[in-house]
Length: 312
Image (tube, rainbow, N blue to C red):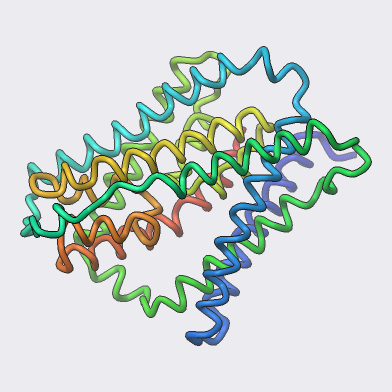
């Protein structure tokens, strides 16, 4: 008879395969402009559905009201650590290995910070919570719904990355993008270790897994919910949403003196959501760097989250 540890390891292996296989399929599928546009449109709607389902799952957590203060503490500390560590690591990279970018002041002047998208995402979670509170258990989504949506999410991301016209060679040739990705990943994972040392109930691998969302809130929320429960899934979700807020606010401020830090603030969103503000703040010359960094982080994040959460 198999031990519980063996069964858990097998489930974790299956989860890793379920995450990576759709990504590779997305890369393998023939690319077309129409398919890419469709994938992007579906992805935007899918994110809202996933966030609503996360809210529904939160409503099923017994005694959640008594845990709100604890969740807020976890989110606050984790956000400060993950955003701060990545920022400091990339600022150090800018200082010791400078990478100059000529900021376009006229673009910065035109920039308007918009948090509307992030607010809509939070509202989806709240709506989901309300739905989960009202609906009887018999009408709630099946247990494997999240896993299916996760696979679809990764597939659409793979199609989008393939359709962007970026080749792996182009990403790897961008030396600065690779340097940034390495520094950012190690710095943020180190902050996850610090987080685990601050809270005795959090293991080292769990702390690193929570930190490895790198701003990809829809994915981190699903993976962490599956691995550690809805409470930790919500911690990962709001931690990565806060990164999105911070990126919108601070990218223009850091771009002139610390361009690598500015690009890295958005983490995985540097490839899509925060790319327009990166371009507005730093000009066209910084766009290839943002794409290279964002591309690598989008590949590394799901692998690290699933692998680390599988370790406990």
